[in-house]
Length: 249
Length: 323
Ligand SMILES: Cc1cc2nc3c(=O)[nH]c(=O)nc-3n(C[C@H](O)[C@H](O)[C@H](O)COP(=O)(O)OP(=O)(O)OC[C@H]3O[C@@H](n4cnc5c(N)ncnc54)[C@H](O)[C@@H]3O)c2cc1C
Image (tube, rainbow over all chains, first blue to last red; front, side):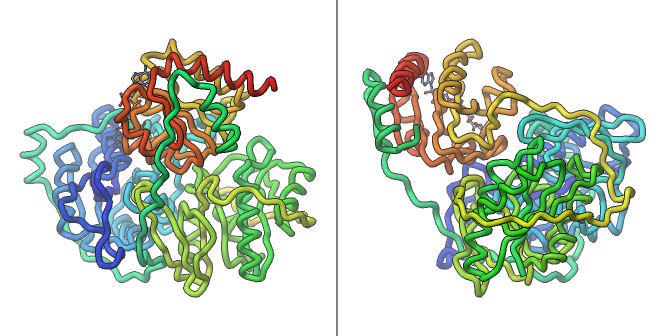
């Protein structure tokens, strides 16, 4: 079986977010870029599966839609343990265009398990995995927090609002994964970093695509009024404020 | 023309979020001079279906195909896309929850309709159709133009509120064309937490962090939640340590919630935690450290020991409720 993990290149989660050009463009000055946290966990689980089912999973490929600047992030995925990588040479403008480029990759080569993170920590679109599934007409399961191989089937856990469901599905399929899929992301070691330099990173030119949406400009959320501090010796006062002023209890 | 809402139920009862979606769609329908239709999938009785009229749905397409009792992303997509075609829907509204996230992007492709997810209000313009959504884990807001003829929106929880707009809902049975071969996933087992308030539906959430020191101290959090009719939550290290189940973990990689009131006991307020709770209407923080970042996000705060404050808070709330 072959696994494809779709990875997005996002600003580190602690980045102070700023915009330039009249708030139309993200200011990338000094920003540290990382693999989107959910995608990194998906990749980790893919590697765990390959280790646990020796022989059954033959290859893990990572794919990213991005300009050459995303290559350090792709190399990190190779250093963690992916076998090969593909970069579609396009600026990811909206979820649809990304999903369309990814669908072309899947049509060219066949993959049995395709994993996407449930969202990316930049546009928080929660869209690419689902769009991709429909574009290639594969079954998809979202909010997957566990995945394993059982015979010729996959066994998944799906998170629902107040609980979980255990789901069986056959390949090919697209898993849209969330927290729980792997515990901790792997840190690349020296050997991994050295090997990553020699692993194949193929660059593919994009197909043309219309935008469905256009992110025209950005704003900052309204800043909050200062926190009202209550004396720890006077907890009743807090209850009074919550009841009479904020009217929330 | 119409606006279509995916009306999700939980064990046969519509979710609170569903009523919010209908209220939102109703406001949108006034601006667009059209009506609201809803699609319900699953076993929901007619009394419950009628409730959608209370918030402004004038038509309900009722799908009772038992093959759809469990969520299958493709089959639900087909049902909703067919309903949208039948109703000539120009806007389709989902909740920004796990179900909405699973189906809306598939419907988007099937109908060639642009999708804006996690929007926080009504459109700011109709020509072009512009709407505001959260980005960068709520650190920024984006003005998004949806360029396609049909538009899909997922609405953030509690972003609009529930408003009554009483009308009579015409309930119509609807049987979408779905082949057995379209359903590829089998649900083998369902484990639902029962008798607890769902974190994503709760008006009040009582949450604890590593400052609570250990799972043995959660009795106070549970008691406080119980007297307030609240759900309980926690920060990520608390669930990673196994003090609480990971169902309760809120934040960027956990659940994103927006209750009316969020209590943070012994939570530092790391940026990743705030990403999941910063849209709460009112945040109360109790933390020993006066410089903890949670105080920047909080509306009310006590610099003090959570383990001491919680019992006093319980006593004071009991007193309030008694009067
Ligand atoms: C990619 C990524 C994603 C993440 N996602 C999430 C997420 O979704 N959710 C999340 O929560 N975290 C997330 N984190 C972790 C996050 O960065 C913080 O580590 C975490 O939120 C801290 O949890 P905490 O506040 O409970 O613990 P700590 O940081 O240990 O803070 C404990 C707080 O309790 C206070 N305290 C101690 N004793 C008492 C007392 N007796 N009374 C009152 N106060 C006391 C301390 O002053 C301190 O402020 C993520 C991290 C990364 C890198």
